[in-house]
Image 1 (cartoon, rainbow, N blue to C red):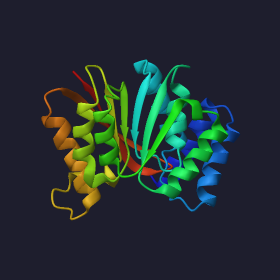
Image 2 (image 1 turned 90 degrees about the vertical axis):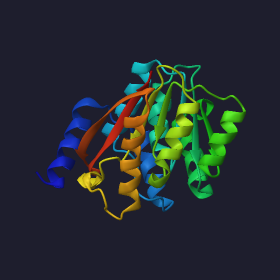
Image 3 (image 1 turned 30 degrees about the vertical axis):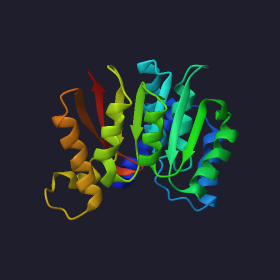
Image 4 (image 1 turned 180 degrees about the vertical axis):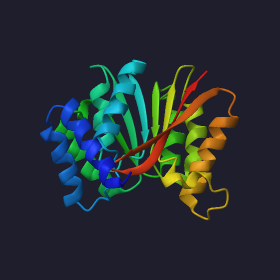
Length: 221
């Protein structure tokens, strides 16, 4: 099958199962206008994240990698009225766009955005005893996957769901010596989850408007 077919099926999923959402359309449009890279999760993936928040019954969510806040908004919508999501973004321009998008989507009261290097922000969250979080979504620079997963473990508890995006990389994850730092980061995520005794995980290969990739999903025992 071709990427054209995958995209057509994604559109069918959205048109069949989702209501029209001009707010999220406006968020993506704002991201494009502000020059952000088009690497947001797809609508179907965003809905999956929102459902995972609801299925877990999460009240506290941590997101590593905000971009323009599209995935953040999906997860914030899955939270109860007293829920909160902390999202971390390195780029100050991306953070500014995201904050505007949170206002647009009416979720600012549920979102705390921290701008700056994620590893620094994670250390600060830990020192503030901000955890444990119920669900943690990792979608940032891939070479740091092991570091982000390590911090996720410190900021979690039994039952915390950890989701790591972009771990299949067009199938290149099977290449032991790819020379691609993003592929190496994906492999490092598999190694971490597979060797961490407190994690019970799997991975889901995905195809769609965003091509061929996938999520690693794990639960903390």
